[in-house]
Length: 328
Image (cartoon, rainbow, N blue to C red; front, side, top):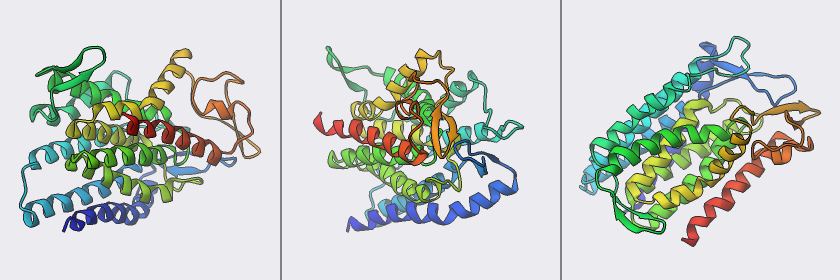
């Protein structure tokens, strides 16, 4: 009767799909809106759609836990699941705080100070640290399998949470890009975890994917709501949580390659260059001519592509690198 567990995926989709319109109206009511910079008319769009994805994820996970506890009578992984839920809730809340601080001209959220983000993200890692989630034996290049002991929960887990929560944000800026890419890398990770019988990790990834599918309907070009930092932080938190609970850190690193490439490109510009561009006749033009400081600049430097085409390109890049996990 494992099909009962699959209902949790449907829960994630439906809760997000139903709650997002209400969230859109509420965010407009409290004036949590920013300019959609890649539109000619620069419309004001609600930001912090990650809250809708979070609601779907929590709804789906509650059903999953309910079935595990009362139907299968198998509560052995509940401690890990609840620690994972707490971490995801905390990291999403930090992203929401980041979204709350909006520039007066509504161009973008000005957010937390750079030093505040890793400090707050460290607190989000605590739930996974205190239960010693994951396996301390790691496959390290040239060294083979090494048991790092307490270094895993006390060092590697917090580094992962801090890094991933900011990592996803580095490639944000286009309607549907964060959600679209998240569907690909979490979808592949979830299936990878499921095949390797890491069901808790697979459940978290799978429910998030279905919540993202529902959110993408509202977030795709032209967006009715933007994901904001609450979404990028959530996706980073889910990525690390799935990697730790499923002991699939290597696969998680592989699907993250586009973000590592993006960091290297941004580092060339001393981390001061922006991914976004200007809009000219419906096409996006990079702010930096023919120079490439971000993956989307490969297309936007030409000024020949629409936002939708740029987003599809980013998703395609993610598909390529996510597919590599099936070769390891």
